[in-house]
Length: 90
Length: 179
Image (tube, rainbow over all chains, first blue to last red; front, side):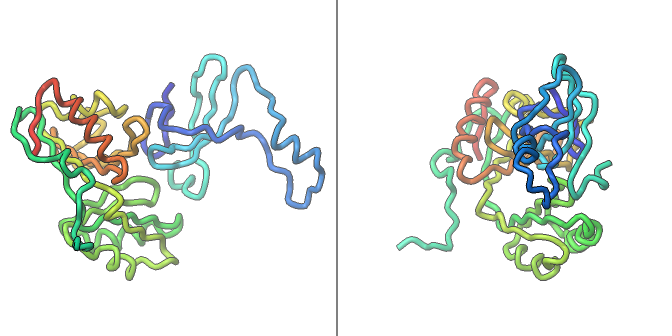
């Protein structure tokens, strides 16, 4: 599988580190619900098809990006930069 | 008593000069000044101007968004850049002792590197004078292409012996010299 880093271009997926589910939304800081925080940390939908994931180009420019990937075919639909340099990389 | 200011190569006996085939020529170099500069997102242009304004004989290698690795053939670059680039503009980190430069050249240089590093070494994707950051297994590498068949590889000092052993083995088929 290859991922297209917004800075470096297409690279082997071994250069990247999976950083988790990009669809999980952290509860607000003033949200004291244990159930909401438990769901944020542990509950995942494990979709069969398109999924949005956070990846980091660990062995390259260290940019974070959101990868939209088909979990069945491994087809990569898009790689978008996130983080403080995201606007400059678009 | 050992002179603590004297630079000692971690490769030591591994990279002793020896003659052989000129299809691959390997050498090591210890940096005089190697500095990483990371600009903050809103100061990239300003930091780039400050770096380029003092370019001289330096190699200025972009290694990430707002980040450069600068190799200078004179000592003292870290202090000079730190005076120009304050904490309000970015971060300056001295890496002089943290990397060893392994140079490879010769008609089979690209072939050897491509056998162990998953990068596109074609000149159209990796032109002369540009830099790519990648890895060989778990050893991170900053690779600067200095010519069609010549590269400088900036390797972590603590892992350079392992990397050198690989590059010698990978160069064994066409044959190599160490200078």
